[in-house]
Amino acid sequence: MKKALIFSLAVIFGFALVMGCAPEEQAKTEEKAAAAPAPAKTTFVTIGTGGITGVYYPTGGAIAKIMNMKKDQYGIRATVESTGGSVFNVNAVMAGDLEFGVVQSDRQFQAINGMAEWKDKGKQEDLRAVFTIHPESITLVAAVDANIVTIEDLKGKRVNIGNPGSGQRQNSIDALTAAGIDYNTDITAESVKAAEAPGLLQDGRIDAFFYTVGHPAGNIKEATAGARKVRLVPITGPGIDKLIAENPYYAKATIPVSLYPGAENDADVETFGVKATFVTSAKVSDDVVYAITKEVFDNFDDFKKLHPAYIVLTKANMLEGQSAPIHPGAEKYYKEAGLK
Ligand code: GLU
Image (cartoon, rainbow, N blue to C red; front, top):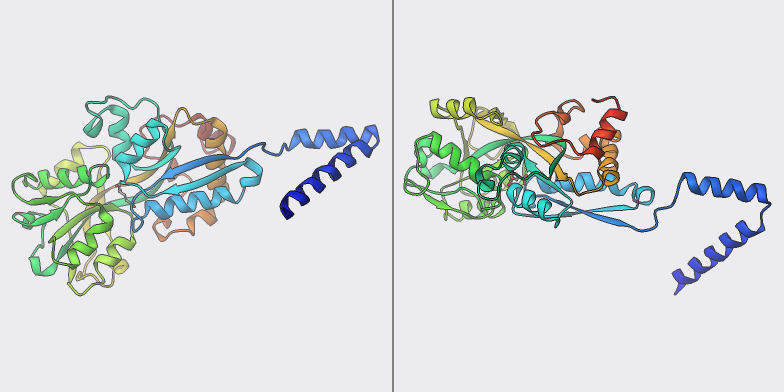
């Protein structure tokens, strides 16, 4: 009621102002209005992320926060959705259910080329890259009492490899296969969401789990902070070296153990990794993609402070590691900012 009254008064007052001014002044007012038009309606955009204890969820939150500070200027309101992960996000963005998604660089590569989960569906030709975010490591977390010191020790154990829809599921399968382990017969593979894995590990219902995630992650803190002692297991060996050499999207990575004081590790953990990327669809408007890109890059220092996993980010490396074509809205900003 009160709001409606204030609104009516504002409209009447505004009307009186325009009507009441001299033609010159009226022209000026109109000019101004044309230069900075108030957005007529709000465009809602949703960012698909991952489990709430991962890094995608706070990443979606960080991007939405930066974007929503200018919601009056752009008329765009960004919201975040917790999802099953990269594969889900690609599919939801392609279906138009989400405007943006955080997606592993390897999954972006596979989706655009019609590989892995997209082998039957074919190339996801409308997939568009916006920017690259933090590095993610294939992380193997195991209970100390399960005597798992190398990836080969997973044989005969109960291991969560990740839910269908997650990015990490294929990474787990790749790592196991490269280490000579058949996930169908050599282990008892569980397919639950990463967010549930720390609880299952602490309850003794699994021996280990894989998670492709940036560090530090709440999930790994949770897994290493319980009564059951837990260690991060290196993922190394000749098979893994070959896997990295054969796939352009995999690279060696190290997890600093100082990030997880509760873990039973005394040295940093060698593994391999990918990068988190921000993607959209060719069907999302240039204006929306331009605005989100501009706000993240123009507020780069503030953005970087929003998660400790962003410590390594530079504007230059946020333009690397994409395999899908860059969305024209993002491209416009990169050219304007002299980044390309
Ligand atoms: N990389 C994971 C996935 O694509 C998600 C990691 C996270 O949520 O931080 O499923």
